[in-house]
Image 1: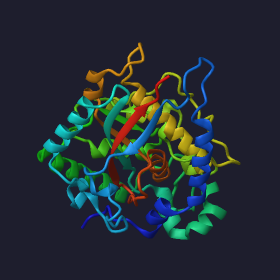
Image 2 (image 1 turned 90 degrees about the vertical axis):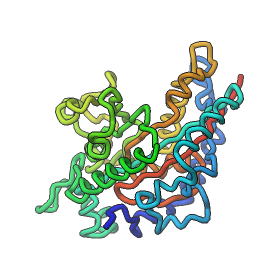
Image 3 (image 1 turned 45 degrees about the horizontal axis):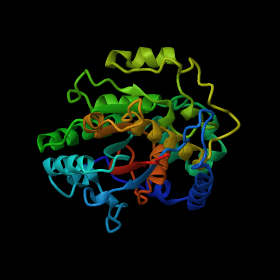
Length: 330
């Protein structure tokens, strides 16, 4: 039996709080024409979803019941055709356009998820999110995976093996939240699949919503290195030892987090831009397939920033998105 089945809470995570999305869109409309102190566009890239590759982008797909692991990741054509089509799109793209396939993976069940299920979401917000244990389970700070979460990641490992056997490409880059539940999920999902040369990049900008919930306070850089250095994780040199971004009396809003995710996407596509501000077609081809491993709140913000339809992501789940990014011309 699959452990990657969406729940009611997963559906609410994906479809609720529509008013906050509108706040982001209105704020983005005002911010998109801003430039930094060097005169460069703050948001040079705009994004849209390309349809016809995965069922998840189709409005007719029932996201409350859909299980990608049992439906070939939702692909609508063979992997060889997907690769060929994306290659052709990039080949024929305008000079300021890039196409990528981004796999947005959510971590498996963490101990904080168990606490939410145990006491209910209302009591979580009133009491438990401010604590580290209920006397039986320790779930904060920086919650780790439960046995169920480990099993979910291993189910993803088997699903990826099936798809790779069917021709799926291994992503060229792996970005991972600094929270240990996401890092553990990446390690277990890609165990004995990912070449060691493709080292996961610890990426603070794709961490879960920041603040208040103690389960979302990250570990120190020293601890992250102790846990995941042996797996080749790359930690940014400028990442502070302690979690200076975490506030105990303020939780990041969805619009704020979506701006953060938009910033990650800007950086991701900027990696294909040469020093003369032209797009490097060789880098585009090399970096077509991208993996991220993060969180429910983070993926919701990806969905908003990319203008994808709302889609329920189960705990431990994943959604592939074909993205067309267009770089504004001066």
